[in-house]
Image (cartoon, rainbow, N blue to C red; front, side):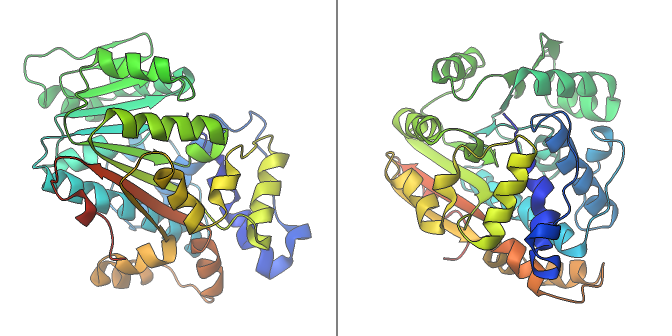
Length: 343
């Protein structure tokens, strides 16, 4: 359920100020928004990695070419990658890694490897996505030693099994599931021994926005109803009702990608309300410019030297239209409310 085609419109919408919405450039995606868009996103991320925005030695094995984008796009991806990983690190350290991470619509995400390299390995790391995506990722893990060897090394004598578009090992699993089908999701998680009593972080990146609101609400509510000590980390568009947001939505429609859940992306308040009205104890949301300025100052100074940016307004405009929202339920009072950025 990767469906993050919305990132293919970052540069489109960023042109609003410079050229006006009628002259926005629209890249062509003939295959719809499921596979082509997340590969686009991955290629942009690879270029940012090649430019030195952050380190990811694994992305090169998942996508061949990096696609050059404007500096504000690269800084946006930096804020996304480092912002999400910062929160994941906090959760892992708080729980001393005695926890589970479930990545909903994981695509070709590399966080399992990156966090493992930092010595932060959850008891269970599960990725769910559509079968077409998991099949491709499993093939890449099987055929690229740099991806497969870390999986094997961390699992001792337990064999790594890759078949039927899924990967299973002691701590790491890639599985296919339709996130709109909660019965299927529950069956898949049960198959690999997900413990509903253990601290569990759910991660989604531009996934809920493509689901009908009733389906995404049901998913969010199901998590809250079944996991007592749980944290939901969600990266999505926001402020979709203004001119910039309308251009993004219009361009996605031209790519036959409909934002079925856009009504939850109207503001930071609607992002929070998604959780608060579906059984979560607390929730907050933060636009990406605020997230950006919550990252270490020395890192910001470093990446801002990588590429010259003559105007800051396109960056501000872009960052105003994405956010990280997070929510928690903490029945065991382990301190989940402290995880996240300064609010």
